[in-house]
Every structure is written in C-alpha cells, then in structure tokens.
Amino acid sequence: MKNHFRTRPASPGTSPIESAFRQSNATDTLLLAYTNSLLFPRSKLTERLAMAQNAPLAANPETGASFLSCANCHSSMPPELRFCRNCGYRLGEGSAEFTETVRFSDGAYAPPLGGAPFGTGAGQLQPITSGQACRRKRRFSGMTWIFIAVMMVFVIGFSASFLAKKANRSVGGGFGVRAPAPPRSYFGVSGFESTDGGVTFDNVEPPGSPADLAGLVGGDVITTFDGHPIFSDSEMTGRLMETPIGKTVEVVFIRDGETKLTKLTTISKADFDQLVAIFRGRPAGQGRLGIDDQERVEIPGTKLHGVRVSVEQNKPADLAGIQAGDIIIEFEKVPIRTTEELESRIHRAVPYSTVTIAVMRGNERLEIPVKMGKR
Image 1: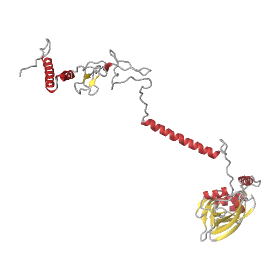
Image 2: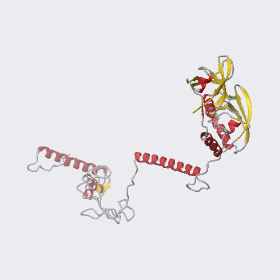
Image 3: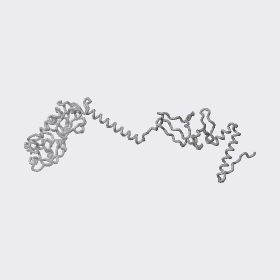
Image 4: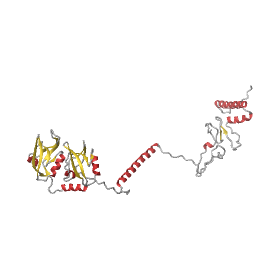
C-alpha cells in the first residue's frame, strides 16, 4: 500500500525534537482519520476529525448555539470554555474561564467579556432573578453549641431558684411579701439530740419553762410525745411545730433505766423569751459553787449517772466539805445526770442561800449543806 501520509517539513529554526513531536501528532491525526473512514460513513468523518482536533461542531438546530466537543470524553461544551467541565481536558483559549461573574443587587450577573452570555439553551445556566440569590448559611461551631448549652443550664437553674424563693416568700402570689413563720410550740430545753430509743437534751432552761415544771432534767430520754413515738431530733422538732401553743400533752421518758410519765403545757416563743429575760435580769443575781473539771460518770453497780468534780480552795464547795472526786447526784432534790444540768442548777440558786447537795464518795451517799456564793 502506498504511503498516503505526508509530513509537513520543519520550518527553519525548529529543533529536531520539536519537529519529531509535530510529525508524530500529524501522523496520529491522519491515522485516526483513516480509521474513522473505515468505521463510519463519510458523513460522520468530518465530525470525528473535528472532535479529534477540538473543532467546533455545527450549530444546534434547536438552540442555534455552537459547541466544542472534548477530545478526551467527547462531551459537548460551550465554545467560550477553556477546559472541559466533565473531565478537565484542555479545550482551547476560551474567554469564559477568565470572566468573573459579578452579582448585582437585582440578582442578574454580568455577561462574559467579548460574547453574549450563554444559558439560553436547554441545560444551560440560567440568570439569577431577584430574590433567588443563594447565600451560604452561617453555621455555629461545636464550641459555640457547648457554650450555648452551658448558658442555658445556668439560666434555667437561676430561673428555677428565683421562682422557688418567690413561692416560699410570697403570700397570695404577691411579690416581695414574706410569709410569716408558722407558730411553734416551745418545750423549754437546751436542744434535742437523737439517741437510742428517742431523743435527749443536756439541760432544762430557763426556770419556769414547761419542761422545768414537768420535772424533766438533762439526760432524760423522751420516747413518746403527745401519743407519737419519737425516734430523732428532727421528728421531735416537727411535733412541736404541729402542736398548738398552750396544749397540754403527755410525755413518756426514761431516766436511770426506768420509764416515767409526765404532762406539760407548751408555750409560745414570746413567753419563752420573757422567762429567759426574767431569769437573766434577776436582782439577786446567780449563784456560785466553786467547782471545776466536771465529768459525767456512771455510778458503779447502778444505772445512775452523776458528775465527778474537783473543788476550788476557799470556795463554797470546799468550805462545805465537798472533796475532789466526789460525784454529785442531786442538787436540792433534783437529779443531776449531766454537767450542763449541774451548771444550770448552780446558776439558779440564790446567792448566799443554803442548798443541799447529795454526793457519792466511794460507796457512801452523803448529803452536804452548802452556802452558795455569788457569781
């Protein structure tokens, strides 16, 4: 077969490598044309050669627009493009890839330089009309959401606390009006403490209180109040708040292992404060015995408790014959079971009056008259 392929002679000044490259490209193009002439009719040959050389195709009879065919993927592209939108293959020196789209307030865009804007055909980009401009939504980062969640927790907690305080301090829904404290009955002791079988207390105070008039003393264990069993100090306080002021109730208590029953009438806080003021302002003053180093102990061989004391020299207890190590068990016929109760009874005594104090010295019980001093 004759050689139908001719190569263009190299122009003067062209290097041998560049000449060989051009001859190779020309040869490949002619081989592709020859092959297409065998596979396709002559009507298709021109189109295939144009595709191989990125030549523009004929105008589309429907839209009237001409296109370029990508030599790599054979996709139709507008002639203004420089690279194929499908595969990125280089198409030519189009101007559309270098034209920046300028958006105006009415939503239109500027046409590419040197040509009419494409987009009139089917499948082409359409102009953006007014109100259709797409804007990217701003999104919060993860730390922003965490901060918002923490702030919401604080706001909800503060609101709940504020509403709770408002509900507790308001009357009838009025803001800023404090609800009056519920009335509470007073018993007349230093304070309650939970113990085995009920509640106990250190001493009875002031003189003339309901507990004092009922014959209770520090160290007694209250097991029942107004018919209700008592097991803790909070329960005893709750019962006092529920008991009307001035009500007479029965009190069951244990002293030295024996169960006893007494009755008392509760008083108001105003009455309680008045009794305290009267005692503290007593013109005669408060008594003094002259003892120190007090310690609550159990009497050996019994269920009794008393207070072991030491004495100060030349003070009422020393002058009356009370010795160090004696255990005081009674003060003016009142059982002494705690150090606080002994102190309370000493202060109640009228200065320079004579009182009888019962002590245990070894296994011997002694009753010693003592002339009180003044505190």
